[in-house]
Length: 400
Ligand SMILES: Cc1ncc(COP(=O)(O)O)c(C=O)c1O
Image (cartoon, rainbow, N blue to C red):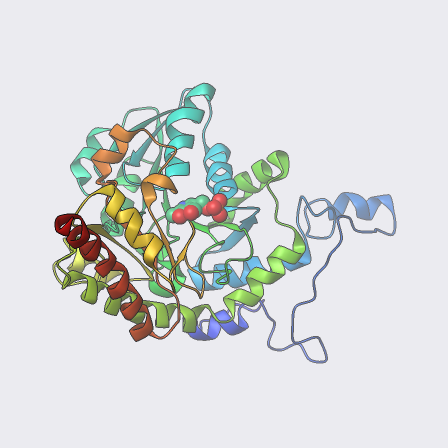
């Protein structure tokens, strides 16, 4: 792709496409091939490091999607993986060795917590988890053998916002590689590389795909760091199928319009929930009263499509609310065009110890919503009727 600077809305549609090339297909073809033919063995040797050797190493459909992602994230390059967890584990394993140490914020995706807290120690890599917004604690946790500083913003599922400039300064001061899971923000709302973060990770399963029908992982950053991570990817093998890469490329074309609508819908839903007596707390970065709202507005162009809230009652009542919803589908994941609802202690954070969860503020009453692109008044009406199910159940108990 030619290097050029367009707005995000334009890059989502045209990124990865050479606008000067004529007489070619408008849609990127799917190179649904595991291997590529060469004319002789000398060419075979040259092909090894290209996207026309063997699909575990690379594939032209991957390249088109990767170029488009790098243009959006404003990084030198990007790499696709088979899932968000393949990208996270591949990036980390590509950069550490036995005896190394990682500093990570405490409230991050449950799968990442499990990998850092339970899997990496088996390979001799230790992680210290720190309070997400206490940057002095981040710095105090750094040791001579620390290699990585790992953060997520906004956080899953409590929507805390991390100061990306501070994180990047701490990492640079101590010679660490900084990594961020930017899944909730999307490159439409936030581009961490502009704040000096080294590697940007995504579960592309969410907003990049946008239709809850494909798994995808993304790592974006400098060519130098991605070279090490590419070697890890080809060895561990967590590579995307070319058809899935094409679905990501197609999904990206509408990402800007989807995310802009999701930003608007989620803010309206958050404002509605904040006014309801059955609700105890609403976590949404752009909502009045959010602890890091000013920072969120400075770093992000929209609050994203995810929010969470606590039911003013018991865990059983929170379950009743989620089961009473009709438009919000009870399912894990987020970022698709359809609205989803889940209870993090039963889904995204089920695999991490209750004590660790409690420190993150992930309670039994916490409900996470992924707001889609539906009509927002319909979504609010659905929430209203589901919350009233709690009140009417209580009234029935009292009447008995
Ligand atoms: C913030 C975040 N990061 C990473 C992941 C893992 O992504 P995947 O399910 O694509 O492996 C998820 C999944 O829900 C997530 O929410």
